[in-house]
Length: 347
Image (cartoon, rainbow, N blue to C red; front, side):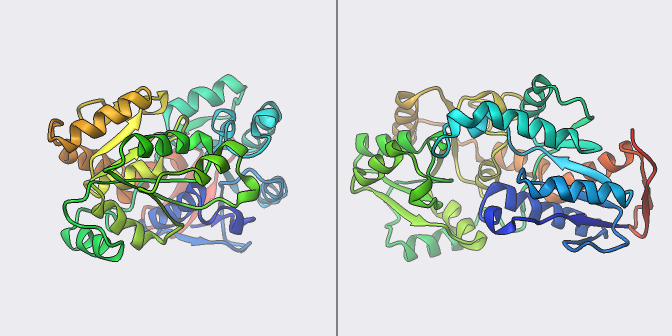
């Protein structure tokens, strides 16, 4: 069998979580001996569609004419569209109707969390919805003293310097305003935010906050995956103050790298990240500051082993097994060696 990983508008998502999810799907399938392509080849029998751009309407219609099983990935919701880019809140109701239309086009829908599934059902998505983590590459993201040393050296950081990092777009939903506020409250801590967003897409509040940032904040920009793995290992804490997620690939990467993790206490984490068991959760800015202070004073128990266990459960090979089960339950027959498959019809 062969799976088409539709990559229309790739340049728009390649540096985002959606782009990373597509690469993870490719790795999952390869780990099971299943061929993938990004071209419209005649022997592809399944298509994965990850983005929500208009070109995907054409792609899905073409795939259905060819009799392919359409797996519609639901990475986006109205809730995580809000508080992102300029005019996103005003456009959110229209976005909800748009993604409902797109997700209904699939034979099946795959979304990365039970929370996201509940949201999709509340929109009126009636196609079968499977919960399947985006996974994490545990062969790239793992604890490493060597990576820690390399990161600290390249960024001019001493071993005794308390370093807090986060990763994401420069948007309010990701919690960048709280991140910058924390830095002002904690001048003895070094804060680094990895990622990039064009200034033209930022809201006025984000632009102003960045312009007024304190001296202990650094924005290294977008870095490749290998450099990011060094950053996780080199940090003392990964703080992810995002207000809304469908999963959070960067959280999985941090857990897999063995760095202590603090997340905002939001619904998406409720059934897999447990406060004071594998992560620490904060309800507001004051909680974030308190937890960082307690960590710096050695008052927080080490949860990294439990965090590593969470990442292992969502490793690419583990999720690959579950992906094959989605195919089977969708009416697709295949041999486990990945030699051939066919879509046996709609559900």
